[in-house]
Length: 265
Image (tube, rainbow, N blue to C red):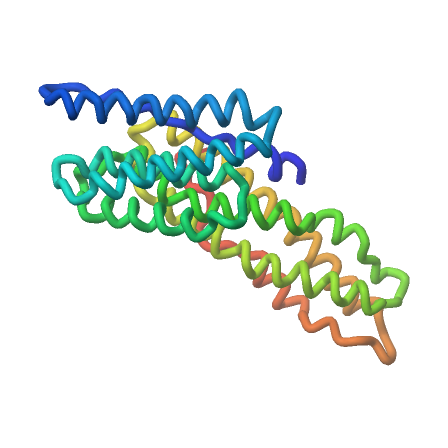
């Protein structure tokens, strides 16, 4: 569980923009590079030692990146830069860990993703693929922090033939958590169907590492949940309280469509 909770590594991508450009273009490109570098510095140097301070700086950086993206997105020639800024903003909002910026996180991710869709095959692959992953990864991380499912499951024992109200409530909480997490993991798998991952080794490695981690976390805890449900129906008899979940329903909840893409094997 600790591995899942604490080792989501952000692959920060710095884009060096080149070509014929005006002074304003050069200044804007330099700002993009500086902003991306500052994101890297905050994540690598500041956040591990000072999460409170990093949260403040990351939120400020995200606000700056969002304002730059909003200003650039109206210019068709600057949309790739706008997308890069939206990727920076989404990453910074996410890693700030502040609940008051959740709305901003969804907004910049949605705005960046729409621009990617507008560009189609001309969209910057790494930025656009990362923007597709931010929300499901952030959701999984939030769920893992708020509900330590492994510890909760260890506190449930139906082999003694008894089911306490607390155990029943715990099982319901765990079931609800799986219902929330399952579509997030399915989204991660569906993003992996985009074959552009195959052309970017760094992005592919980042994706595969976290997709496998998400699958292993879900599958292992869901397997334990199925075992607990089975123990309940086999051992708790008489005037037993209702668990609200059958063995077949628990097994169905464990199933995930698709799976980690074959290129991750």
